[in-house]
Image (cartoon, rainbow, N blue to C red):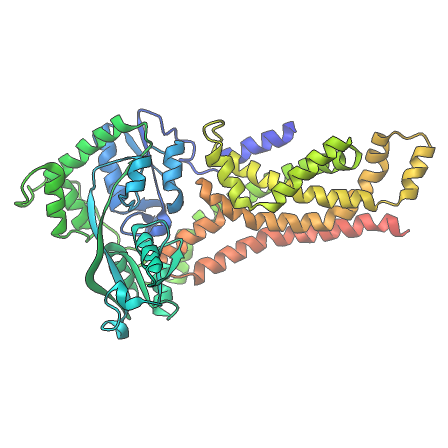
Length: 510
């Protein structure tokens, strides 16, 4: 157990992202969260250096940090988990195109709106005159990003006998599916819609707005005082033109923002005052709009990030499997040798664990138990995967223990062996040999299930690949690299297991 704990600590230090240990409560840091998979112009991996992020929300985070006298630190989190993560304290503020909604205002401390957007419909060019409003799309499949205002609009339209909503986890694939004919339309804010149309020339954005909304920053509900300071920084940036410069630099400025800034600051919308000179910033062309880079160049840029993420995956998987084996053996032994009450308790625990999704267990462990025990992301991922697979391992070991011939057990008792001696010297080794093959299968499965821990802000191989694919607008190269890395991790294990099976089977065949 001590060795496992040491390996866990080494794994966290060696493989966790450099900013994962940043303390969100530090008075010198502004740890902010966002989802780089969403891409530009919000937050995306810099196409010139994927280890960094760029976007107008990145610049706004920097603006707020300077106003607070702090250093900005970015933390990757799935878009759908931003609200839960900021309440849990993973970071101080969430900035990633977060929409202002009544539900969000009731649960979190939200900043003043800093950007106004329009929910618009995107269709294929051939359907530009056929589908102009949601009423025109009755009975048609309309895609959007889950957990957004657009999704709520589609759900309302569905309840009224209208559209068929199709939810996505990112804002890139809906437009790809629309271009391929899998959807009839996409409803999202105009910033994302215009980017999607630029990336897919066969698509057009309808000019009519289905609704109007705003982007805000979100903080934990107890951070109202800090939110008020941030509001002051944003209002000052609206008055002096700093925000306008940021939005113009990312080509998302429009006249609606003049009215929004006037309403937020309480000044008449007579135009903006030129901002003081800012340092020259070279804004890269968003990778998702610039077309796929050459194969060798894309590989050179993104491979280091993928290798680092693969290291997190393999260390996390090995640690979780070690925990699963250890706990699984204890549970199996308890179910075979324990008292009736202990067998009943362990059986119930195994069935509950096997009967509920591992993703749900991760959410409960990390977010649900946060008020009681605040686990670091990597530790929560390790425990969640390890305990989940321990239930499956225990069933394998229990079956293997019961597969040892009863004659050998009776012979051991005749020779005066205790139950413990029989388990350690006779039954256990034979059961372990029988369990080796299914153990190997479980480890390969755990290796792939480790992709689920991205919901806990752990950026492993699959999540890094999703960010890569979303930012370059193609899954061909990222998918091939990701598959190659998974095979490189799993095939040696399978080969080692087969070798051990042949070696351990030899004495039994003599």
